[in-house]
Structures are given as C-alpha cells and as structure tokens.
Length: 393
Ligand code: DAH
Image (cartoon, rainbow, N blue to C red; front, side, top):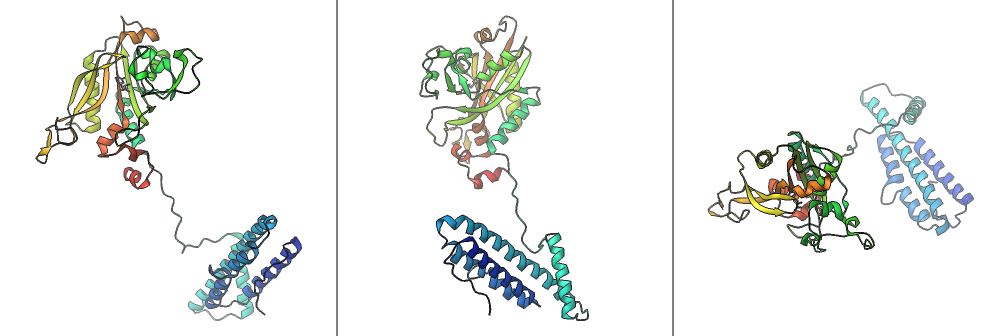
C-alpha cells in the first residue's frame, strides 16, 4: 500500500521518530523502483510538489498542528526531512538522466541489475561531490555602486589631491570652540543660534567653549589641521555636517561639505582665484568661468562668494528663448564661500600672522552634485531609492 501522511496526535520523541522512520523508508522504497524519466517526474511531484506534495502535507499536518512546546523540535525535524527528500529527488534525477542519455546514444540495454548498480555508483559519486545543476538560473550577485554624493566628493577631493593637497578629517560632534570660537565667531553671532545649530543636550554645566554640538560646517577641521601641522600646509577636509533645517527640495538637515585650506609665507588672493578657477573648470568643464563676489565670513578677510557661469544657459541668462530658471536669468550660479584666512584665526593656533598668509574655501557637495547631474531635489540623495541611485553606477 502506498505511503500517506497521517495526522499526528502524539508529539513525543518516540512517536515522531516512528513517523519519520515510516516516511523515510517509503521514500527509499519508492526511489528504488524508478527506472525512467517519467517515473522520476511522478516521484518528484508526489514528494515535493508545492501544492500537495508529501513535504507540504508534512508541514501542514505535523508542523502546524504541533503544540507550542514541540514546535521548535518538529521544525528542526521537518527541515531534516525536507533536506533528505530533496537530496533523494536530486540523486534519482541524476541517475535517471544518465540512463536516458545512454539509451539515446544507442548502447545495448543493460540488465536491470547492471543498471541498478550503475545507478547506485552514480548516487555515491553525487554524495561525494555535490552536483551542480547547470540548468538552473545562476545566482545574481548585483554589484554595489558609489553613492552619487560620495562619488562627487571623491571627484572634488581628487581635483585638489592633484594640486598637492592632503586629506584631513575631523569629528562630526564638535565643541563650540572648534565650530565657532576659534573661527572668530563673536559670542552672539547668529550662526550660534539654535535655529541653525543642533546642540547636544545636557551640556549647560560646561563652559561654553567645551559644549558639544553637531558641527554645522567643515571649517573646524581648518583649526584642527593647523594645530596638528606647521606651515606650509595644504589640506582638503571632506565630511558630513548638520543644521537644524527642515528638509525640502533644497535643504537637508544632514549634508556634506569640502573645506580647503592653504597656508604658506606668501599666499595671495591671486592664488585663491587661480586655484578655485582651476577646480571649477576641472569639475564643470573648461568653458566655465568664475566670478568672485564680495561676501562675509568671520574666519576670512576679505571673504568672497564664488559664482560660476551658468552651466545650463552657458552664462547667457536665456535658454531656448526664455529666461534661464537655473540662474534666474543672471548667467551666474553661486557655488561656494572662500577668503583669505583672518589673522585673528592664526592667533588661536599659534601661527604668526606677520609671517604667514593663506586662503580657505568651503563648498557643499550635494549642491555640486545637483548641478553636475541635473538633480532637482536634494532629498533624492537620502531617500535610498535604488532606482535613482543605480543611475550613477
Ligand atoms: N563654512 C562656511 C559655511 O558653511 C563655508 C566657508 C566659507 C568655508 C568661507 C570657508 C571659507 O573655508 O573660507 O557656510
């Protein structure tokens, strides 16, 4: 009589053992009688068919009805049975396949005893070296890709590395001293306002300069680099910064900046202009022009905003006959801040302002990526949507 899965009332070890033995012996007996491909297919469907194969029945009637305390044991048992059944189906498939091949290649028919012993040889061989089924679809291993922000950051760093800059990094959790005080921010400068800065809670007992905050820019790494090294010095400092801004298409509370600093004995504003003009051409193409527009930062004097000629309208202010929306028809796009290091800053790092001079600059990485790739919403960089991200692979 052919085997059927019975319902279990008793989940004791002995009862489970008995049920499993009965099942596995039926598996062996049925497997032994298989002689051709059609029989194997029937055998396979009977045991592993997803809808009503014996394995599915075992899962339904043993595993699901097991009392909670036996669930884990029955689960393990089921996994063992499943592995054995699947192995058996695979073994028999392999040997059936080799008989069929031989039959097709016109060899004289073997006696069933011969073919049985050949089949068990094959099975043993399979046991020794687990067979690879070359007919199965391969396992896809998709390659990861650089995030567009990191890609842009690396590209910018690369431009400055080629100019002889080295790379420095600093902490994202900074003290008030490095983020503001040593950068010559007066005590009640608006940038210290909680509107912009995310302060770490519970710091009130400390003196102001030791209080912790999430750095609002990468400029504190200027100070840390100057504390560590003596001039001449040329560094770029890439990293993550934080501001208390509500997210929208152009703002994100977390974004990235790259800071630059060069200090030597005879650095002038011309060096700053030449360096940034070169960098913008390297990033946006050699036809891009730069313009330095007076500005203010507490740690540079004089300070400037750098604008590049609009890469969308070629600096003309009009595109397809209508005003260019990207540069508000001005022909220029503001991109970064820069200036000559304020002598007050040298006082904090023990450089002699009478002997050294230098320039600094800071740029937003997302802003550059948005322009380079024509992205219209900064949030796309942070939503983690692979359909967006894989376009940069
Ligand atoms: N830290 C400034 C900001 O986040 C950017 C900046 C401006 C950096 C001028 C500089 C600089 O090094 O010289 O807005």
